[in-house]
Image (cartoon, rainbow, N blue to C red; front, side):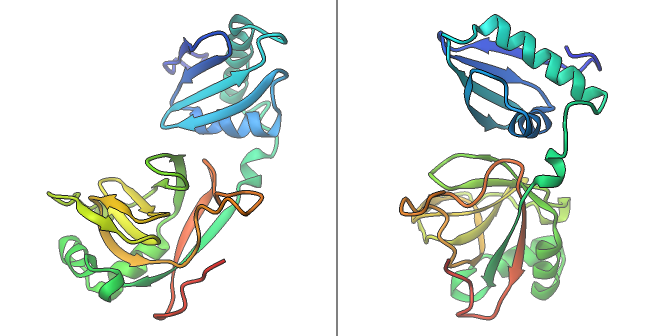
Length: 224
């Protein structure tokens, strides 16, 4: 546990990786981005988990664990975090809702007890945040849906969900970067390319980024 009694676990993954499990994973990630630890080469976030890849010639797992415990303790007191929280990016995703590109919108609205227009307004007003990336390159699990917008997954997944589909599944929202099978409820589509190896940053978002959906007329859903 850390100084505030929050459960923390450390798992060594070979000689050059250490996983730390903590409810404060996002805050720790922001702190490490703002003030990196010497010898740490990459930090890979997941839900309540960070995996740190480090240079074993510069530090060992025990030294890194001690440094992380100290960093977590500083988070408890508000020290050592710098202005990382203020530096988080916000990505606005333009979305065409309903119709052929959002075949589950009517079902979701009815499930929430809202009109389609009210459902879209509520979804666009939800303060979403990238919890972690996974499933397929560029796919972000977005947290922050209010309870009434959390939708049950399909009983049988679709064999093909078009790229750019905006979907809801359980407590998560997400956007499919490429055409894949999927079992979430599709409510709209964006033309944003969420995985492009020709760009300096192939993926436009990272853990901790804020995300907001913006409703746009059909045929005007971005594309950059």
